[in-house]
Image (cartoon, rainbow, N blue to C red; front, side, top):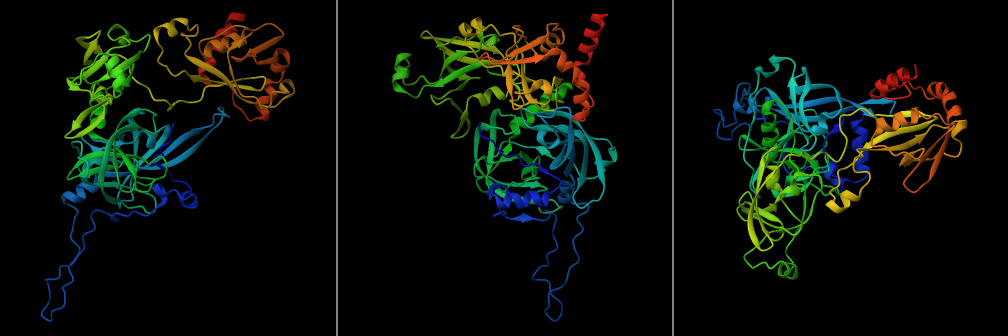
Length: 527
């Protein structure tokens, strides 16, 4: 999986970060802007050549007062975001630290601030500051979409909105259209603007979620701190800066398009975030002539071949392996799996799925066994980020073994494979991520493994594993991985060392708070 660097930046040690980036020669983050970059979009103190005094010398004009102009109001609506976030360690889940980040946001309708999700992820304290103003205003997260890398903030002090105005979301820009990206990148404290053009509009992976969606590529420099800043064409927002190129290419940045922004805002109209619908089907392009001939397709018939329908989903009731999907929402699908979205511009057909809200109906035209059919497919399941966000670590330590859970990715399986899977009800894996050295776990100090069973019994989630371990009454606890590798714990020795381990590793608790109710339940059952 490619890693696309996001453009938020830690506030602490900025000079060190910049030095390291320059030393590593990552041009997309460290290179100077090759397009015009202003200290402030409001800098307007120029004199005119045709205004002279009696001797012919140019007149010195006083700076223009922009305090009440439309340009000033626009600039007042773009804010610098200071985030203090909780930072947790996978290898030491009982411990946490804090991290400071800087990003950009802007005011939209309803006295809300729009920014990137990764700018405010795991936040414990958020402040906003306008360009050139010393005052900071406390804010909090109103809603967040890790799938779209977007977040809405609410400012606690209403007086914040007395200046400036909200920025309006515009239409999807055209390729080669000129835009201006606003933000607070590293290297200064004032609002900057970088001009560039839209290079392309594609369907690609978002770094924050690991999910693919429509994105705008621009040649304007996007640097750390620009995250969440608006891109303007005219007076309207046509994108939100989110990440730079995966391989460090110079002056290639990516923005979240208006279609995704509007989907997020519309989703929240009922006061709840539902997310983006999942298309639980795997398809194949129909470019190859032999493949098309096998399915008896004429030259005029285009589309994609359904190769798998995910078992356990609603899609099983409407689609079958071997179906040819020819249209989505009445838009023809080309043999390479794309649909037209602008004149002469094509994009992955899943773009049309992303335009729908959860529980909408997707209209598909298909060919099944040579016959044309219309299918109304309910979109009743939301797609979720590949990564875990905004969650405190869950852990349990026993005998020095640090156990943590990981959620299972819902892999798409064919029905026959799904029915054979004896672990289809499993929702979490449990792993030993670290071993805190002690006399009872000698020989396993460098161990890391995923646990398949405990004393021969399988489990479906972390809580079930915890109960099974705590209820063992035999002298030994045997943990096995999928290949049969065994970790044997002497129960009496492990329990005798628990208190000492707490002191030695400065732990307040041997387990995360989410397991406290189970512990109380087990203690009560013993009485």
